[in-house]
Image (cartoon, rainbow, N blue to C red):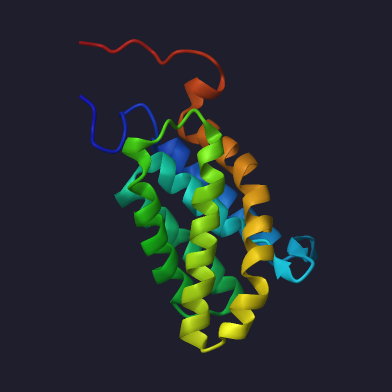
Amino acid sequence: MKSREGSHREGGSLAWILGLIVLVALGGFQVSPLAQWGAVRVDVLLAASMAWAALAGPRRGLVFGMASGIVQDFLVGGGVTFTALRGLLGFLAGTVRPVLNLRQAVFIVPLVAAATVAQEALLALLHRNWPHFVAIWLPAVVSNALVSWPLYLAFRAIWRPWRAAGASPAPRRT
């Protein structure tokens, strides 16, 4: 029987464990000097949470988005700002799962671009720093969009391992 957010063969415990391990590794990258791309710091945690949410659906996107936010709040000392914001963005991104062809990875680029603009605009409003938003929104969108496609492909391989390998899933037992 198929659930609303995917079959029982995809997104199992192993996928979640691997996804969280990758999330922590991406957090390490995000605070490293390698993530500084000109005027902005590429937000691989945002791109990862949008990719996972698109694959997993709204409820699981909420959970993974919050996990992404927890990692970022821990690393940058944001309190619970990113946890709440990423949870909301993950939930919203997960709602696209039923209407998108998940095999066509190009959809992740505009999804991450929209999430980047939403996140930066909400942070600018929260911190009352609209000039900062105006200065960085476009470079932030470009940098996050550049990493979104490879991150989506990696998470799709974790979420749906039989599809990444080109094999079909094991036959269902009745």
